[in-house]
Length: 329
Image (cartoon, rainbow, N blue to C red; front, side, top):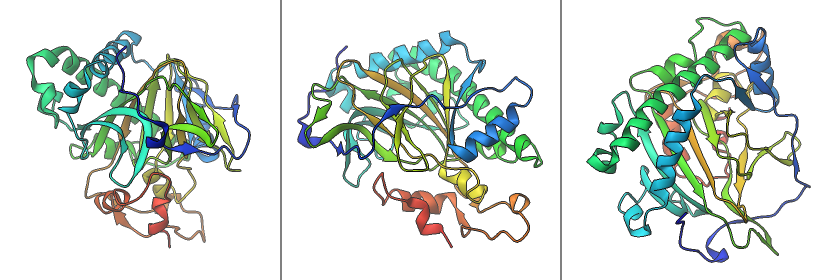
């Protein structure tokens, strides 16, 4: 596979591993079709903010088709990929993540998701005749993964015993929903470990949106942070999807659900390709802890704000910053 031109280690982030890393066998694995799965979803959101979904109903052929198209794109000559950038915020990016100095051993393609077909998307490259196969795979995949995200969100509502069932999912399904699809490609790193630390593929952060639905190939690298601050590796599973609670959902549940802090470390031998759907609310959606989830005497931890207001603040921060801190009471 053609990958990035090799940057020097001085151009990408290093992270110091302060506590031993280990594979975490306690990642909840949930089959949404099984009785009682709603309670398991709630427990996973409270304890980790992260879990794996199996038997998700999305055909592996569809997943493989889109991944193949993504791999083809990342295999293009660098000059061709850069014509799709810079990612401000949508388009192709390499090494630089955002505009505030974060870097990583990664190249990526970021796409805006709207209610319109991908032929009308923000990236002109998708309107070209040569992109018809990519466009077709995108449309099918986005429809399927959005449905999965809504199914998970509705399971959360059922597990919390709140109504209506679509109280969370309606924000993602709204015609004005501000959702994003991201492809990340982490090329093999010739020196994944340096004396100063480990080379970072994508630095530690939380996701701003309501929910993230992640699918990756069989290459390791993803880590999540536990409540005690330790980092644990997540074993890859190309047949499953991983679910992240986002900052917005943490606010809506008044901190009951945890927006998981996570990162990706560079791999020395194999490429890692991931596809992440970020389900966000409409731009003008007002976010605040839901009163029907507040226990008697419980105080709101966050002031009310709009999703647009939160995004503006998030774009001014570094990846590792606590963005929600600006909205705490």
